[in-house]
Length: 81
Image (cartoon, rainbow, N blue to C red; front, side):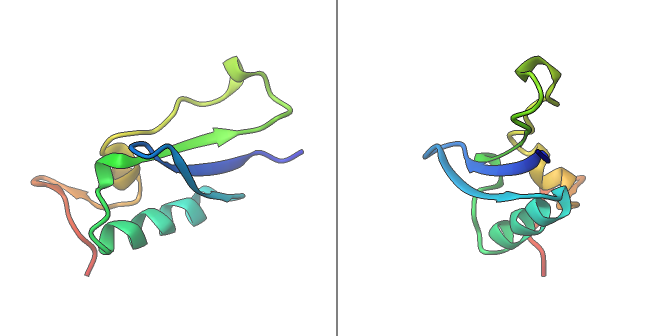
């Protein structure tokens, strides 16, 4: 089975979506932040049922998903145009 990236709202603990590629999840991050969604509430994680939990990459949370999506600058998170 192929792993996938899950995007979660860390505040409500609702899953926003699952994507096979990280690029798809980061596009959703950019879209949400562009609609004034709080970037600090987003949580990005990788899951692969075939791998043990200890073998999964760390969870990306706080401002890091927005930074990974290219939305951070010297003054913090910037909204896409």
